[in-house]
Length: 182
Ligand code: NI
Image (cartoon, rainbow, N blue to C red; front, side):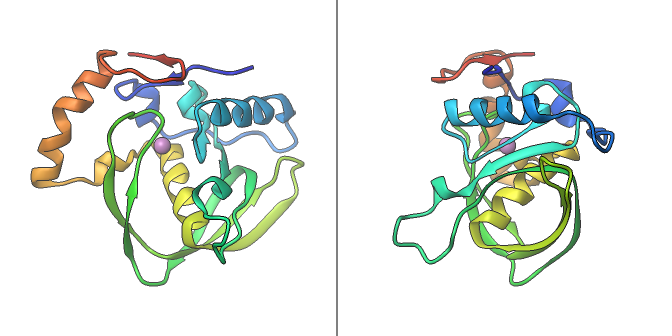
């Protein structure tokens, strides 16, 4: 099933998501989240974006990488993730979000992270990620904390996107995937 994507302005995007009980049957939800993300040509999708306040996100960082890129992307689900550490040189990269169409902004984040998480078969993992995969994980992890990339904007840039955000929350935006507005 392809879910509509929750638009900016919906309170669920600002709430901290709840842990999923270990061993819960999440296979259908994970499959639906991959289908929803792919339908919208996204590289990541967090459960709050389909109006489910639980700690789960899916990513496919292959879609951001050129064929001749040295970095290998991954397509994976992350359940109850915890960022144990973030490190490496912070760098700026232009981010966007399926919940905030037509808005993009340069955001500074550390280069690498260590993540503890369960995979979709409830195997506990601890793994280091870097490059664009780390970037997507950081963005999606923020969704579980109720943080959006536009929350990092300050000053002029923040003022520049403000009217666009109001338009999105009122449904005055066009997307080639289905959205639900507040
Ligand atoms: Ni997002």
